[in-house]
Length: 246
Image (cartoon, rainbow, N blue to C red; front, side):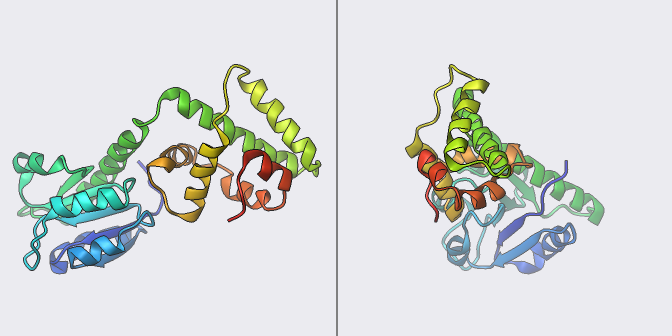
């Protein structure tokens, strides 16, 4: 499974022990940040990160991985979380309830470097897959279908814009396009759409923005960045969708 290049945060007070993991991820092309203090890690955490590793035990803090996990879930609910531990499968079940998407046993005696790297890559895949299941389960298939419909219409608007059509024509054609795809479908309300896109554009993703993020992840060829630029030039279309330049 091939992943896009990610920005990853480690929160662990023993850099010496996680340094090999960080190096392995850097060698795979990922960007890796590190914090050795739980409070600093929580403060640094945001949806800027694609994945966060959290150690379970911290010698100089009264917080453990479960405490940190609960705080991270409140602050950045979409980011996949991986618990770093040496407790093994039996004990790990007691910690997963906090909201971690996977765990990684960093202390396997006699393990070869290549095997550790393989486990690490698999851990990324499992964590992201579990995170996406958690995200997608919040929305029904019908909701995702309607969101897809509106995203398709917006991208269609971009193609019309590139043919130098007038603003009024674009709005009319987009409406026709939506009806042509599914005449029975009711479009997502403008206020909801505004929330999705404004949060996405500002980088402050939360549960209200889960849908648009899921759709963009499922459709990596999305023309949204180009479409977003076009919105700045198409006042009527902006007004139609109630999406304002930020």
